[in-house]
Amino acid sequence: SSSDDFNSYYYYSNFNLTDDLLFAARVLEPFLGDLYMEREGDTHTISLNRLELFHVIRKFSEGESLYYTGIPGNYSDFLNAVPAADYTLRIREKDGVPASMELDIHAKIEYESYDGEEPDVMEFRCKASAEAQKASVDCSIAVDRPEFSAWNFRLRADAVRALTDETPRTAPPGGAKIVSTDEL
Image (cartoon, rainbow, N blue to C red):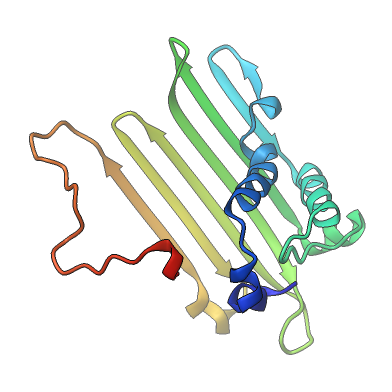
């Protein structure tokens, strides 16, 4: 399938939220699942290197109908297309309750250049952390070609939580149009 499937009447008329949520949970399990975490003291870690990521992605691209993976089916082709890839999720707990989280993702993906010369390389990096009072994320996507520098993207966000006496907003802003999910 291609991304066009998402724009088709067939996709929307055959959308099953329960099946799609269960499928998403199966896809995300190797990246977030308790069974994949190694524990050392109060720290739980999932680390996947390039070979482990290949096996996770291949499992789902062969056994499930993913809309698009773009990942080569054998490891030697994967090594050529993905020169770097690693994923780490670290959760620290205090008194049995999660106290902080760190996420680190890095990948370089080569793809055929538009002019047929050397392959283009896209690099993706994301670092995120969260604690009870603060969170931050720093993500970037860069294409290693000077003429594509306008396509490079970086997002940096920091958040701090503090006690307040303000009343939380419980209704949408005035004039907002409310649409039923049946109308989507």
